[in-house]
Length: 332
Ligand SMILES: CC(C)(COP(=O)(O)OP(=O)(O)OC[C@H]1O[C@@H](n2cnc3c(N)ncnc32)[C@H](O)[C@@H]1OP(=O)(O)O)[C@@H](O)C(=O)NCCC(=O)NCCS
Image 1: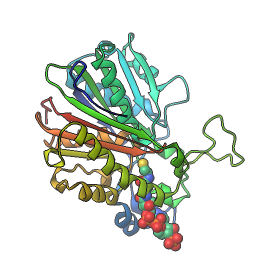
Image 2: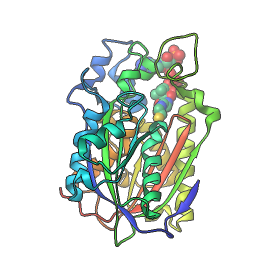
Image 3: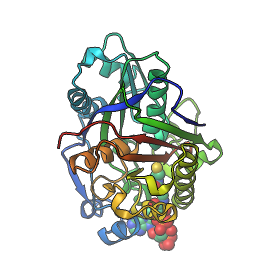
């Protein structure tokens, strides 16, 4: 799916918040659980540490403070929200949705609230969906959450997946605004590649192996990621009549520094325009892009007028890009 945002109401991001768990887990600590090393992880992924949720922390516990921060920045209350989408593959539970749980806590009594599953691309899918509902006049103010506690579904004896992921959540408020924020989206899925990154046994399909852990073919996912990050960005920029040279800030999914470097080089985006925080958080799945947005805002790198390109990719296999003109002054 690809399209520009020139027909409906003008929509932008007016608030941003994020939260990661307190516990920092270093590469050295992981080397106590599996046969790995700080040198290997840094060289192959660029990851130095990640945050891991406490046993009593569920996704809604991480997402709630992120929502509060985003609402405060937008200057609105939970009750003003009429749409709440949570992009995640690790909701508190299958049902009720984490969206419904959060809407209740936030007092968003009139909100449509639900979860959306598109792997690490979930936040991009949810942004596009919320954009469409606001641009079409169905929703007035939306809260879009992206977050995961992937540490719950990792095999803590499998070094090929354990070292890559971390926990975290981010939230954004979307509102109808006078100045156009979102310019276009490109989203896609290739279910044929789904078994390269999957969680067999997590739903109604019965498997002989009762384990419920992430299984991944790292090399295939690497090839897929480097290809779609470039393709999706190029296609979206072209349909929006922009070139790579126009991009002020590039926010790729934070999976692996080598994947980011590869995409950045191929696209020809100078490294000073690229947001990278995978070294501190690992791959936080649906939390990745909102966490990177929040980091860029905290560093003073996200400013009104900038052309911001975000691209996610992940399980499904899925991918998705959004192009926007940033409209909000972010308090440092
Ligand atoms: C997983 C990934 C880092 C592996 O890097 P790689 O350079 O492809 O490494 P390989 O898979 O070729 O493995 C090389 C060797 O390292 C070993 N290895 C794998 N994980 C290791 C670890 N954590 N520590 C030490 N050695 C490890 C492998 O067993 C292999 O050993 P062998 O040669 O004796 O068989 C890389 O493929 C990747 O990032 N893929 C994308 C994953 C991803 O981003 N998934 C989420 C998408 S949303």
